[in-house]
Image (cartoon, rainbow, N blue to C red; front, top):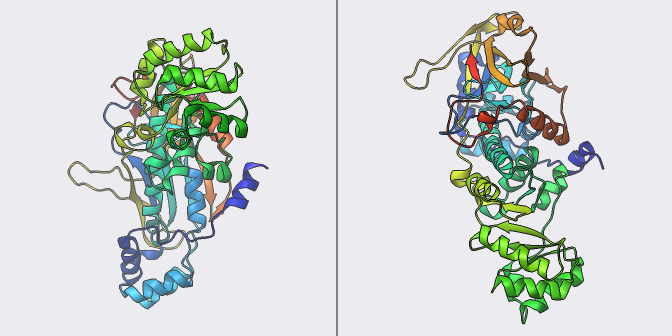
Length: 446
């Protein structure tokens, strides 16, 4: 089944309109009263700064966001509840009842890299239609971009070794499949999360946890039950009691064709070396070694650089939460506004001047300049009126139109996004790929 068919069969009809903050609706209410609700407006989503130590961010979640905007509706149940809360005028409830986004959305492709002030998403519509989307835009993109950036660093650290996403139990049930999708987008090979498999076709896998071993009379009985169900190509968890004894039991039960063993504790470098030697001694030379246990990019890099005899790594906590995936810090700000209703009314730049939170007014266009060897050297961000400056050799346009007048015009598949990310990572210099703190991967010219 193709991804579009999967999307259609897995789509959720539940409206996303109340996955928002109250002040989005009170702004709409007040704007309808003041008259600015129907003025044309442009909002941009960007970050003021990358997380400390990061050289790049990764765009992820755009496709999920476009789904959420399509489902941003106020049905009878939502309107009845809002009416009971009694904080909106009746006319505002009527406006919400007929809400459909009818504007334009452009942005960076999923998988693209970004830096501070990169206009990764631009929403152009009336003020009311666009402002009400702020929370859903930020909740989707901040989460997915955070996971994607962490995952991209882990993929770099793994240096070609497959990574498996397994963070579902460390985040919310709604965030878990989204995290799995973002991880797959940046190069993870599979996920343990079944909903990500159903919804987006992400490859899934998984066998057994320590509880399964403990539930049986002994380790061999547990392994036998698992092999009987999945066959000898399975992965057996060997560190419940003693790793060496676990490996011997695993090979005794599954034979030398055992697919893999997993080690989830201890000094993974040392344990993997000892495990490889024992597996080879027992004749299981093709059996792979999988390790897990709160891995992050630093511990992955240490294993790889140290020559650990590890074939695959299972990553969870540090990918989906905690210090491993710091907040992306994306904001959604009004940058241009018309002073009267109507399509003919010209837009003029608007900007905050708050200390430490100032913004740059006016709609922006962006491109990335590559050097003669194809490496990214500069991000050019200019006002929309100067877009012609980007039409030069060696500058790759970064923005794509996803929605025009409320209708979807471009929806690249997850496979497309994954391939695009692999290509743009190829534009990074060795220094820009480094996990150590440093300057952003490109200079910014605006």
